[in-house]
Image (cartoon, rainbow, N blue to C red; front, top):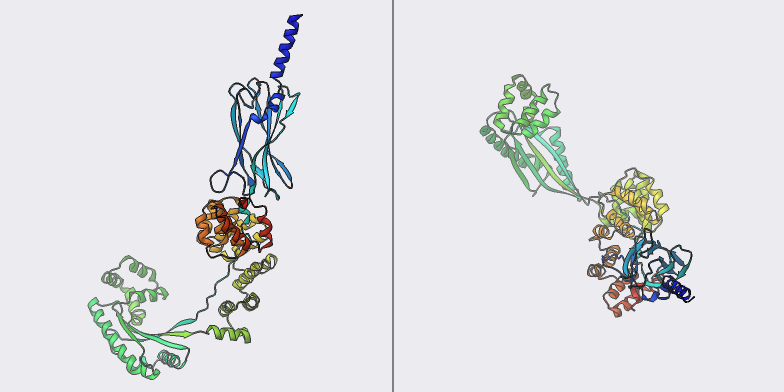
Amino acid sequence: MRKSILFACACLLLAACSNPSKMAKLADQVQASAVCESGTGSDSQVLEVIGGKITPTYTLKFPAEFFLSEAIMNVTPVIVYDGGEVVGQVLTLQGDKIMDNYNVISYKKGGEISRKVSFDYKPGMEKATMELRAVVYNSDRSKQFKFPVAYKVLDGTNTTYMLVKTEGVPAFEDDDYQKVIREQKESQILYTINQSNVRSKELKSAQMKEFEQFLKEAQENERKTIVSNDIIAYASPDGSMNLNNRLSEKRAKSAETAFVKTISKKAKVKNIPLNVSQISEDWEGFQELVQASDIPDKDLILRVLSMYSDPTVREREIKNMSAVFKTLADEVLPALRRARFIANVEYKNWTDEELTQIINQNMDQLDEEALLYGATLFDKNEAKAEIYKAAAKKYNSSRAYNNLAALSLKAKKADEAKGYLAKVSDKNAIYYNNMAVAAMQEGNYDAAAEYLAKAGNLAQAKENMGALLILKGDYKSAATALAGTKSYNEALVNVVTGNLDKASAVLANAKCPCKSYLKAIVAARKGDNTAAKQLLEVAKKDEKLAKRAEKDIEFAKL
């Protein structure tokens, strides 16, 4: 009888020692902790959202003689927030006598285990905690015992990257309006072979009279200025180099004399710089004339020119083609025995004041470039739009439609912008950037990324891609894309990556609420609570920022 009683007591004692309820009662002996992945590269002591994900790593340390050999434990990570809770992947642990494939915790030695988990961010998680809930079972899971208290391992959520500006940066097309238009007028006189005297008939040609008239009118037009006149004299590439050197020099002198005594006098040109030069053998002109001719063997001649650079060798090889050379002597070489007269004139286009006046009175007389430039002279977007509409209507201008779309995007009217972009025929980098901005404003970030890929290295496209990269959590690439833009998003990416000095440099002179909010975060992270409070007062002029600040973990220490 006594043996039976002792055996029964032993069984009860053994059952008590293997009962998982004991583990639940001693739950406070387990050490639980967690850190979260952060944008700075170091472990965060609060939950941090990156690219819409929260990825903490929790650790459990079990003391010796705690985890019963025949026990099974489920650990469930949970994020609790105002809107409810989100359950993460369950971790199952087993004692060292359980014949299963879970992680084993030794009864005698205890043990430690870490697990990385991932949660999708949900609105409302700005104020959240992460806790670990544990349940233990006996070996056949017929009995379960919940740990009386959940392990609270992280408190608060950092969502600073969500301050990213995603309205996008539209791009405007440039105009080709020239405030000073450079013109050239050219005429020439021809010489007979081996001669340098100017024949009178050359100075009386229709071409020369037209040149003289151009100079005269330029002198009389207050918007035109004759900057200089050039004379370039040539010898044809036949004969010796020495002969051609002397000949081109003499022709330069005779052409200069003819210009000063005849052309300049008739056109009443005074005190204008005259630049005189000579080219001994006009191989360039020779090649152009041959290329434009119908000479049967012109390809052969051009090949000789490309094969030999020495003028003597060129001349010899061409003369060896006797039949060809006769044609050249009759049709090409005479046109190269010449002196060119070139007038260089600058025309002063409408000034900004004149252009503004014309636009206000009758912009229909303006060409496309003047309209595109004229729009930039007005401050109000309504006025700019009217001018761009005129250019779009009159010239079906893709640039005008792009600029109209950019104005709409600045006003955050994506639908209106897309209407203008649908009329763009020249789908260039600016078009694709503006399509991307429209997609960003509609929240279609995947489509925006596709458009930006087609926009190439356009500055605005790179800046917009930087915003998308922040959203994705690729802060390194975002920092590269935004570097040097001095933009809000450049400051933000440096805040979330912990480059506070760089962020401060970008935000140095900023006084608007949104940038003041970032400056307040920088101050708070540096421990300057006084400055942070002052900057928050400026930021709270924006109602949304004021509401955000109430829950922002960045200001927990304030």
